[in-house]
Image 1 (cartoon, rainbow, N blue to C red):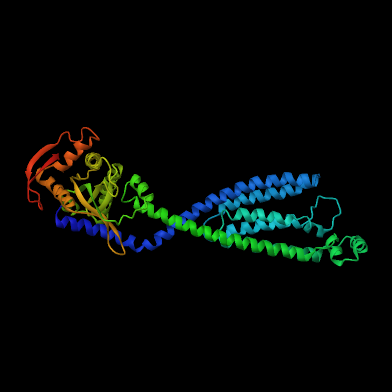
Image 2: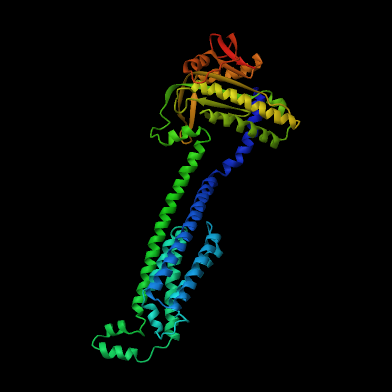
Length: 463
């Protein structure tokens, strides 16, 4: 690959990367938002299922408490709550949604109406104040508990605040507009006149305002506590999303099985060490001539397609993508964790790359596009592994093995070959005995001069 071709490819890639680097700070936020959105969707589904389970149970239970036909009125209210829960699940999303907030408010309004307003189908004469004496307020905790599954901490606190306001506002309205049942208060005062507190408590016409305020205050305190618990959970979810994003970024460089090993490994990568690894270089032959008449966007699309296909083969053969090099790339096998068939994986990857290019070139030929030839060089030997850099780290593989692999890739032009590997790699492939036939069809070329080495070396080539 000439310096001009390398500069052309590199500048094109850098032009595409500059925009993504400027958006890097917002990418993490978007990833976290996506995780929160997925969490909320699952939470809403669970909340709806919980509601559809809890409310039918309540419907059966209130029949046990009040076995009269007029109880069907409350079944209708429970059905409305089930339906509204479904609407909430459809309107829910991360961030502010006026429709969702309105439906939540409507949810609480329906519940308050059902608990405070007397049953119009019940012919029994019961003081309106008694509606507050049946401990029905506890049903609001079901809505609050379900809300913690899906809503933000602000919404959970809002549910608590709105419930308290509705409950106390309904108390004020009912107290203002209702009329006490005559004779009940007088009878209670006659029986319990010695204790005004007991008389007030047992008076069917009394709303016992202090207890109603206590219910509202306790509910708000519980909602605030749960709200901050939800906030803490969402913070943990964001951090987990960040870890997931980091793992996804790691998978751009390492094969999935290596990522799995690294995620379970407590040893830091920055411990510098020497290992025997296989190093593979590939780049497009004649890229300068090929890209000369192309639009920059077309060049980028071409490189992306090429890199994508080659990257797939690297990961499929348990390799590590070390870096992109303009119109090529460097991959290593045996990093960051060495294996028992690193050399065989590298050579198998090279054959798979060549096959992938042949398929791609046949597709391009049908479209009237020129062929994309590429050269591949592989060497096996000792290299230095570890993180380099201070604040921004890069996992590096350096040493004479890397340099030789790059020179072998350049040697593909001289030998008119698609793949050139060192005799050292071939010997390691034989020693691994991992996949028979990998060396079939190779042509030996002894005495090849390789820049950077004092002695000529024997190489194997495939056309």
